[in-house]
Image 1 (cartoon, rainbow, N blue to C red):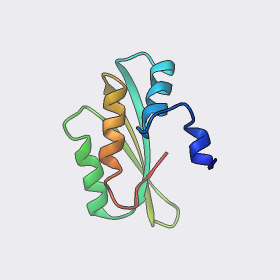
Image 2 (image 1 turned 90 degrees about the vertical axis):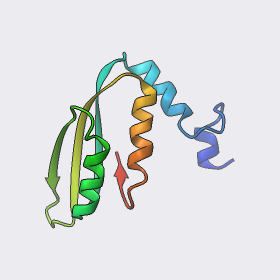
Image 3 (image 1 turned 135 degrees about the vertical axis):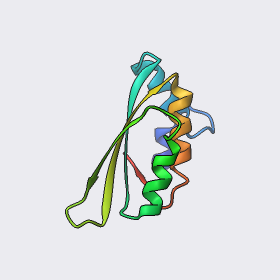
Image 4 (image 1 turned 45 degrees about the vertical axis):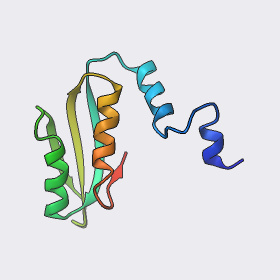
Length: 101
């Protein structure tokens, strides 16, 4: 059994099923949720990330890495439920080379 199979034992084929369950157990919705992302310091990628949260009242803070090659984004936004959290992660995952923390 691989590590991934072991981690997801007891869960279906939905890769977000375990995460969904953890969110349901640990948070009371609606709530303010904090996302953290790291992307290459590229204006297009930064704009793409910000556009995902543009329709919200998200508080977005950006920190440049010491070398200037990367940007760290902290996004605080009100979410209605765990599906909204997962939806944001799915949208952000479409950005090339994004690291989701």
